[in-house]
Structure formats: C-alpha cells, structure tokens
Image 1 (tube, rainbow, N blue to C red):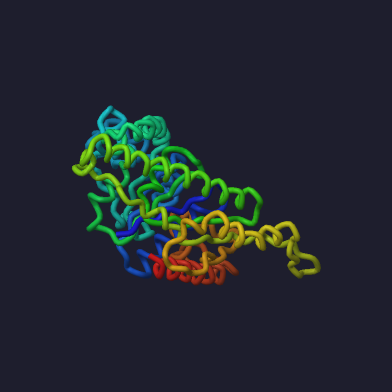
Image 2: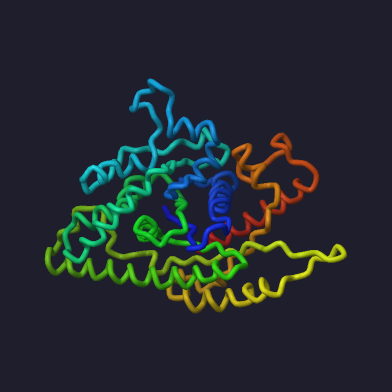
Amino acid sequence: MKTISFFNNKGGVGKTTLTGNIAAYFALEKKKRVLIIDCDPQCNLTQFILGDSKTIDLYWPEKGEKESTKSKTVLDLVGPILSGDAEINSKIRPLRSSINRFGVDLLPGHPRFSAFEDELSSAWAELPTGKAGGFRRTNWLYSYLTSIEDQYDLVFVDVSPSLGALNRSVLLSSDYFITPLGADAFSVLGIRNISRWMQGWIEYYEVGLQQSDRLNPGGLEDYDILIALSIKNGFLGYTLQQYIAKAKAGVKRPTKAYERIINDIPKEVVTYLQSFNAPTNEEPHLGDVPNLYSLIPLAQSVNAPIVALESKDGLVGSQYSQARSYKTIIGNLAEAILGRV
C-alpha cells in the first residue's frame, strides 16, 4: 500500500479536483483498491464525492438518529487523542465505494478537524524529550494506515494549503507527495515555502528520534511510530494548471508574464524540491492540466469524477470532447504516477 498527498502552499491550483479524478481513475480504470482520506477542514473533496444531501446528513444527522449509526469521519478517528489519550480509534471504517461514483472508499473530513491542530502542536513540542506520547500523537495517520495496509493498494490524502501541524503530520506519514502548480507567482513561491518547511521539520523529527534512543532506548518499539521517513525522498513531481490565453482575431496569444513563470518553474523545482526526489531520476513534470471551464461545476452537480461523466449527466456540445481529452490527460498522469511508485 502506498500513500500519496497532493500538496502546495498555494490554494486554487486544482488540487482537490485533481486528487478526486486521479483516485477515481485508479479505481475505475486500473481496478486498484483506493482509499481517500479528507484531511482538509473545508471538506471540499468529501462534498464532491458524496454530494450535498449525504454531506449534510454526515454533519447534521436527522433528529433522533443514534450516534452509533452515524457515519464516522476523520474527526472520530482522532477522538481519543482529543480526549487526552495518545492513540487513535482504529475501529473507524471508511464509507464504502458502493455509495459513490468515484469507485473509492472515503474517510470523510470534518469542519472541526482544524481543532486537532493545537493537539498536534503540543505533541510536536514534546518530541525533544524523547517520550513516546508526543511521537504517538504525531504519528496518528501512520498508525491508522498501518491498521489498514492489507486492504488498499493506494491511499490519497487531501490537505489544505497550510504549512501547519496538521499537514506536517499528514506528509510525515505519506510515502509520496505531488505538487500541483498554477502559472502564477504565488504558486511558484509555494515551492520555496514547502522546501524550507519540510527540511526544518524533518530535521527536528529525526533529532527527536535520536533523543528518544538516547534517553529512553527501545521506548518507541511497541508503537506504530515512523523511524525512517519515506517522504524524505517522496517527491513524485508536479502538475501544471494551464492558464487561459487571451485571444485576438480568434487566435490565442500567450501572456508574457505567465510564460515567464512557466519557463522558470523547472528551475525552481530543481532548486527547491530536488533534494526530496523519489529515487526514479525521472522528469519531475508529470503533465499539464487544462482549464476545464464548465466541466467542473457539471461534475460537482452530479457528484461524479470528470473521467466518468456520461451523456445522462448533461454533457452537451464540446463538453464531450473536453471530457474525453481530460480522461486521456488524467490517464497519462496516473500511468506516470504508477510507474514511479
């Protein structure tokens, strides 16, 4: 089982749409056993997959519904930690693929999951003491992944653009990460932020491990705690979201500012993310993602991945060719990802 996070410090680069469609392609076309874990408190991917009605029922169940019958979320998974324990509720099970059109199992997000940030920050501060408690809470996701590793081939984790404790814990427990980019300066600056941020906390975590080994030899062995971080060499590559070129007399003309940024991206990636490269020595540019115009709201309205849209979903006119083209692009991205993991 491999765990992949799509992450950039810049929002609005199509991360959630890309995560959902890549995961759906693996499930529907490649017949992989896929799980999505929504760790973004905005829960956009949860809503995309389940739809408004099921999402509302998830967070605001019908009056009188028993707690035991309510679908569980990632917040329930870490409930014991929020109550002062150091371990997760490993009995939490994802929603099954049979209830959605993505073909994936889903551990839904929760708007109150952001409250977990403070708990993780406190746990992080404990690492230099070498005690197991801080490491156990920091490794909450790794502990869960260990409990389900024989059930899935691929796990995709959706996160927010934050450089906070929550995303740090997710990336720490991931095998790989992919960085979606847009043709804008802030998206590229996100590359630099990711590099500095990851280098800092990886070093801090490893110093904590050394302290634990010195002060409490063998004290971590009985728990699901990462000793070797796969994410140190887990950068699979980046995708680039195409900008909308201006047209004059029916001919699209490139915008100089955007083209400059696009030309600088490969150098920025090599400079700031090369040290995290997965050991494949391949071109980091996984592919371009086109502007999808009306396909995104259509897919959201029928709660289906774009790669699975049909005429009955309301495809009209040029949307047919756009959907086919996007499926090919997603397929190529999926094959590139699969070859590297």
